Length: 201
Image (cartoon, rainbow, N blue to C red; front, side, top):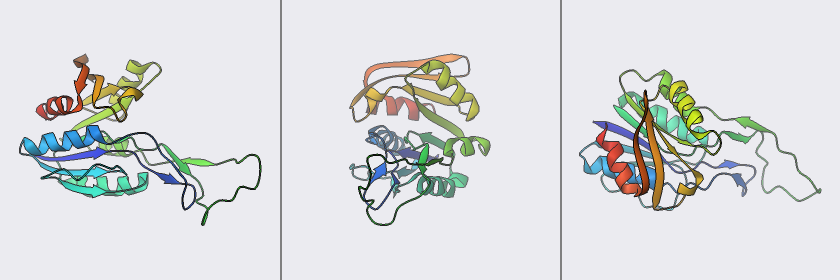
C-alpha cells in the first residue's frame, strides 16, 4: 500500500526572522511513517520544520509553510492509497510578509491574517477509495468538534488528542469513526498508537 503521512507544524513568516507557528514536534507523524514502513508499505512523509532525522525507508519531503505543505501533499495524493494526517497546519498566515526585519516603531502592532488552504478538506473532497485518517487537537467541546471534523473532511477515522501531546513521548487519545469511539489510549507511547493506526489501513 502507498501511504502518505504528514507531520510537524508549519511556519507562516511575518518578516525575514519572525513567524507564526505552534508547538508540534512531529513525533506522532514520524512514528506513523516509521510504523508504516516497517509494515511493508511504500511511505512518503511530508513534514514541516522539525528537528527529527529522516525515518529509514521513508521518502521524506521537508516543507515550511501551509502552502508548501498543500503543494507537496497534492502532488503525492493521486498516487497514494491511504493518508495519515498528523500535521498541525496553521489555519492563518499574515496577509503581508514584510521585507527584511520589521522594526519596532510603536507601542502596538496590528497584524491582518488570512486563512490558509484547508488541506484535509480538499483531500476529503477528492478522496475516492482512499483511506483518510485525520487528527483533531481540541480543548473545548472536544468530542463534538472532532466528530464535526470527521464528517466535514470525509474521514475514515479521526484521532482526538489534547495540547499535552505536543513534544511528549506518551499520549492520551481516542479514535472515532461512524458510530462513536473505536479505541482509547491512555499514557500510550506514540509508537504504539502509530502501530494501531497503521494496523487499520
